Length: 365
Image (cartoon, rainbow, N blue to C red):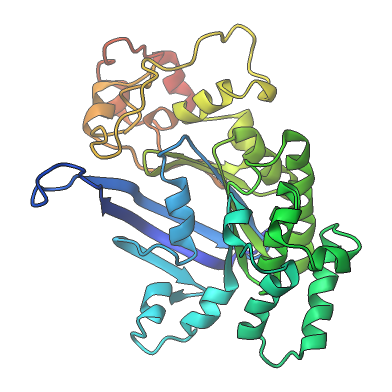
């Protein structure tokens, strides 16, 4: 479990960027993609936060922004109280140098092979960051530490794997090398961006178990990004962490994994749960709990609640105003009118094709 003191703190973060036009007129206005909109999130020490959502939901952009790889267009990101981008631009005499922040925030990519130099051995690739960040280590000490980590992630004998090239490794072995490279930096937070999605199903649980075992031993935190709810649920539940759900750039639900899945409050979370058979949705739920299966364009997201165009319980209030995050139970937050006693929602008319079970209102009073 995490402590109350956040290592990373995101406050009302926006990431908007211009989309490539692709047209013949180079002077034409290019549409703006609202990849992340108004997201606030804390990541504590020895914490695990799993973020899940469909393709285009903004989860990867959020993850890269959180560790300083993408500059936000709005809001702030702090590492232990120090604004990351003020430190990078050396403003206001930062209390924590950006180099230290960068070392403390690491990433494991979806395709580890693309991040490994094909012309370097594993030993050479892992030695490079150590030479930069720990120059006091001599060649023998550096190699000994690398071999220890290689063996620690289950690659034995380590001397054999250390002298292999990337093409001589399996996908799972490459991912373990990427995990070693991150851990060698003694990071506070590791962004695992779809880190198990390219692995065979049989290897995913094994890799996630290894990540959790090392996370506990090295007192690091994971920000785990996935489009697969079953993977996100597994790592969040086994770590006693939190599960966050993103939709069109917004964090619509966040809370302890078991609470979010046993008592999902946002209708989009219910859609994701319905689409994941192994989570045990009732057999009678044969149709998706949505009015429309098409996902809106993030360039032009719907007004109000962005899910209202698909929500089976949307009202006119959902179309006109976005709900604020409400506390459901302790750390469980959701941005949905149905979890509150907001009279503007309960008194407004359902949208075409939607239904409103007014008797549910009493559960929220």
